[in-house]
Every structure is written in C-alpha cells, then in structure tokens.
Image (cartoon, rainbow, N blue to C red; front, side, top):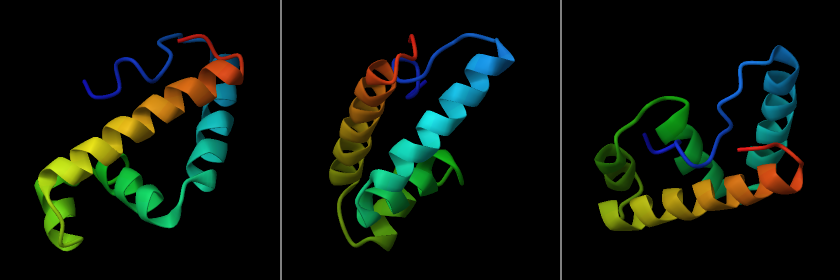
Length: 84
C-alpha cells in the first residue's frame, strides 16, 4: 500500500525492464543511510519499528524518510518518462 502512488501499474514486460532500470539507478544515487533504510523496508520487508530501533531513532523519523524517498522516486520515474 505504501507503494501505490510511487510505482506504475502496467504489465508490459518492456515497461517492467525500464522501471527496473530506473528504480536501480534511483536507489544507487540515494545517500547511504536513506538507501539502507529504503532497502531494509522494501526489499527485506523489515518493520518500521525494527529499522528505527536498529538505527537508534524514532519510528516517525523512519516513516518520514521513507515517505520523502517514495515521493522522490515518483518524481524520478516521471522525469524518466515512466507513466504512473
């Protein structure tokens, strides 16, 4: 549900490859802390609370970081010409 507004919904395999490539480029350009949090949440499925605990910060800070990163991902994909 967190992804609803940030990723396209098409099923065309060519589109999937373009999205995958753009997504990888986006993640690589993130600052290290944000990249680690983003990957832990959306690749490994770690809970926000677990990530916050491990990083010695608050759930709210992690939620805000993830929200901003998803927003940046949406903008990045739109600039890449990927329709959402």
